[in-house]
Length: 211
Length: 211
DNA sequence: ATAAAATTCAAACATACGTTTTAAACACTA
DNA sequence: TAGTGTTTAAAACGTATGTTTGAATTTTAT
Image (cartoon, rainbow over all chains, first blue to last red; front, side):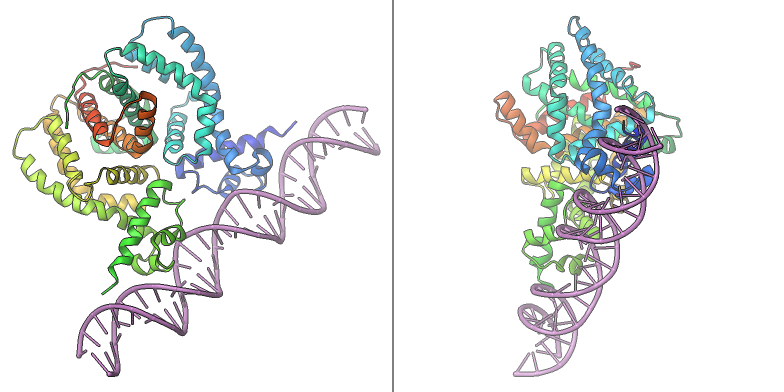
């Protein structure tokens, strides 16, 4: 059996460095140095840098996707509110390898990178691997927003995704900024509790203004 | 006097390539080839790749910042609604070198990159160059949301920014996706008209749920 | 028209990257 | 314990990057 430490230390280092600097800006030498392993270990254990990137996502998303799928089995058989659906996401995220608040920020930053620096291979990997569960969740969103047109629903989901990913991607520096500017004492949990009503209100907005 | 074309063609090529692939993934050889100029021209006209990145932003932001500042002079002396403040942003954006809808998407993608791939030098450049105008706008936001705590206001502004930047960054592929999935015929203007009520509703949300 | 300045060009430079190679060290089984 | 497959190690490979150079060329101004 493989020495479990090496591959895992590579994943830990890669995850931290990717979320700080992005994929292209992080070299295998950065990663292996931080992990304390030999440079060639990445290619040996993961085959290539691309596969390593996918593995970093899979370590979070596979447990999450499984747990989320179970929760969907329950949710699908009851009536829900927007807040409940949002809460399901957050709760499941925090119960699948993301218990620690700081890991949450790291994961969201990675998710943001997957969109902004999406290198093709990542998008394909993510949609082919986790697309089905996402589709099931969307079906529940449809159920609770019957008054929205498909178009409105489509865009509002992406607005929500954007607000969440963007904010959580920089949550550390934003929290620091908030604490400095406002003299307050915030943390990521409070940000999430601020985010939920914002998203729910945006999703259910009845305004029909034109610009 | 310098041959004006070269520097401008470099900016055009750089802007397009940056918005497609990001900063690090775009090489000077990519840029100069696309621009049809010599490789050394970038270093000659801009000094370095970093300075070129800043120049790409400045070409949009300096005209915008000036025009926005003028509009703020007006706005500051009247009572406004959230929708009006949002509209001011959009209208000014579309009147300062961003007339064409496709340029709008490019600019927003660059803005998203400035956050996600923010290389330090860019953040410093942007805040030192355009921070003051932004602060004036924030003051107007404060005025129209007296019922919000500073903390709520702070976070909701960033949620709004996230929804806008994230969505507009991928507006082309999202519009294509919407048109394909929904069999509809959308464009960026319609996306903006969908975005505005979403943002306004989120900003003014009265919900105080805790997760 | 001529001198000076500004710009373009091809080539080379130094550096960093992902990957491959070859051999040594290790772990496990027969 | 001997042997076999697995993992680590150091070094080198080939490629791509940002930048610099110095001569050729074009533009500007006298």
